[in-house]
Structures are given as structure tokens and as C-alpha cells.
Length: 330
Ligand SMILES: NC(=O)c1ccc[n+]([C@@H]2O[C@H](COP(=O)([O-])OP(=O)(O)OC[C@H]3O[C@@H](n4cnc5c(N)ncnc54)[C@H](OP(=O)(O)O)[C@@H]3O)[C@@H](O)[C@H]2O)c1
Image (tube, rainbow, N blue to C red):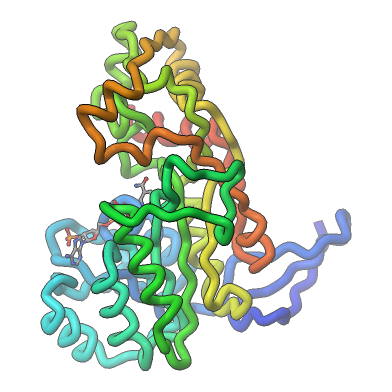
């Protein structure tokens, strides 16, 4: 494949490669090393992002409480983000500017205010990881877009929405920002399972191998569009230097839409065992666990804004991603 590179279209750090066979231009991973700060960095999403960023040659710093090891090549900063003065002091002591700051663990309006206050004068671009649980589960569109939406106003999703609003309404000065709304995230570093009673189930592989019947709420008929953590990490990194993504809130989901039980069927097929599912009543489950209501709706999303902004559109088919995930656990 013969290709040439050119800069342009608002990408300060990226390159477009022209594929002479297809005649199309394809964006390639950035080659200019960036100075990146992760809030988080040793967990599931943030650890995956840290490893990808390091592998691309970026200078990666992660600010955590220091309770878990960081991957090779990541520079540690230690502070509890909830201790606001300590966090500010750690950033002050680092005494640097960042091309990209990714808040992997912002959960409420105060976290978003902290991001604006501390990074407005220090970062070119802030990416805030939100969630698809911002959308009210009982008032969905199919697929759900970012604008024509009804939002949750309480609990985890409601607080993430409040954080998004802080960014939308704040004066962020020269700092661009982008919010990503991932749905169920899967991949190495996490447990398998996307729906109660087998969400993030540490026993899932053993249960399937034993021939145990899985108990899925609603029989697992809710649609899902899971995103592989590494795909999400690619989307996050594609924000850097992309002015088209400034001020945008984007859904971030995978390319495959399945009923939730099919997610478990794919895993059973990988293991070479049959799948048996018992349907649990949605009403009974909700009565016992009302805080889990956001799981019980179709979670399928319009990704056209992600594409229109020129961000990486997740492309790993669910069956491929789950194979890697299962293998990482075996
Ligand atoms: N998992 C999903 O399916 C899903 C779906 C949609 C959205 N999301 C969003 O994705 C993001 C990532 O989720 P995740 O569970 O994978 O988390 P994660 O990125 O693994 O975050 C945990 C990391 O944050 C650090 N940390 C935790 N509390 C801290 C604190 N107070 N101060 C400083 N560092 C702290 C931890 O290190 P230490 O313990 O050493 O501090 C660890 O490095 C979240 O914003 C979540 O809402 C997740």
C-alpha cells in the first residue's frame, strides 16, 4: 500500500495518510510526542489508556493515590483528587503544561470544576469521561443521539450529567474540552459480564464451564453496543489537537449491537460450551435494586458526531474483542 502524509484539517499533531489503492485518506495515530496527564492511570480504562499512550511514544504522567502500580513508562504523581488542596499542590509542583489532560475518574460537578480551575491555564485540551447512564433509561431514542435526549437527574448518571454541564457552561479559556459518553466498557483488565445478575461476574467462565444456567434480567433481551477499552483509549487520544472536537459531547460505543444474552453466547462459543439462560423478572429485580434501573433499557447510540468530529470511531467487532478479553482471563 503506497501512502503519503500531509498535515491539515485542524490536526496539530496528526497526519493524514493517502491510500492510493482505495483513494481514501486515513488518519494515523499521532507521531508527535504529546505531554499527557491522566487523572487515574492504574485502573481498567485509565490503565489501558496509559499503556496505549506510552506505546505511541507520548510522555505520560498519571495522578493517583498511589494504591496500585502504574505501567512501565508512566510518570507517577501522587494525590487524592478529593483532597482539592493536595491535588492542586501536586499539579503546581509538576510545573508543566499539558497537551492533553484526561479525567478518567470525574464523577460529579465538583470534579469538573476542579478540572476547569486547575487546567484552564495549563492544558490545551481536557477530555472528560462521562457515561451513557446520563440518559434516562425510560426515555430513550433508538439509536440515542447526544442532543435529543432526556437525562437522569440523580445517582451516578445524574451526577455525571451535572459534571458535563459544568464543562459546557464554564469559561475554560484557551483550554478545549471534549466529553465522551462510553456505554459498557469491556476488555483485559476488567471482569466479564454486561447485565445483572452476571455483570462483572468473577465466576462467569467457571459457571459457563460447569454448565450453570445464567440468570439474566429480562432474559437478556436488552440491546447493547459494548466498547473495547482499547478502542475507547484510541478515541480519547484522537481528541488531542483536534479542534473540531472542542466543546463537543460524543457518544462512544463499539461497532456491534447485540442483545445482552448474545454477549454471553459469544463467550460460551469461545469456551466451546453451551449457554443456558433463565429469565428474571425486570419488575421484581427493580423492586429489589431500584438503583440499577439504568441497566434495563436498550443501550444503542448514534455515533455520527464522533465521526463528524474526526475522532477515532471504535471498530473492533465484539466477537474479536471478547476473544481477547476471555483469553486475558484464562
Ligand atoms: N466500566 C464501564 O463499563 C464504564 C462505562 C461508562 C463509563 N465509565 C467511566 O469510565 C471511567 C473509568 O472507569 P474505571 O472504573 O475503569 O476507572 P479507572 O480508570 O480504572 O480508575 C481508577 C484509577 O483512578 C485512581 N483513583 C481512584 N480514586 C482516586 C482519587 N480519589 N484520586 C486520585 N486517583 C484516584 C486509581 O488509582 P489509586 O487507587 O491508586 O488512586 C486508578 O488509577 C469512569 O469515569 C467511569 O464512570 C465506565
